[in-house]
Image (cartoon, rainbow, N blue to C red; front, side, top):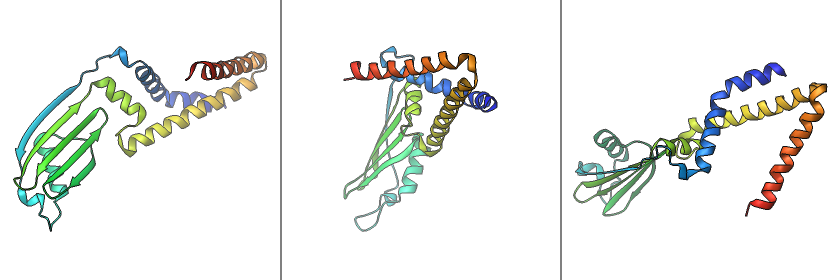
Length: 187
């Protein structure tokens, strides 16, 4: 049990530290530690063939890859809407978004990219917002590590006869305090 507790704690140390710090920044957004928002706009013209016609669908892959190459648009495609006159695309990533509006008739387009500072990036990663499946797996593995650390810590406490009573009283006290705050202070 001690071996599992020590090594799961050490393996998950960086994840535990990351989620602890970002928990604080999420809880205190007014601290604004290095939070800088930026918005960039651009315009251009692309090949009208890619935009299709009323009978032919747009070439979505070519359009998206063109925008990535030409304007360094990043993130996942969150929405790609097509109507008779216009295509609109929304890209999203942690602390990032881009909106693109394309005229199907002329091939002209407008790109607006918004990015926030590193605190917003860390907060979005904490929540798993627009961060993809791989990062979602990191969050899940971190949660499992925290569960293992907690359960093995309690098991070790139960094994130590001299500290068992004080440790269990402290654990119960923490749980009761959490319930009191939840009951009395949370609207």
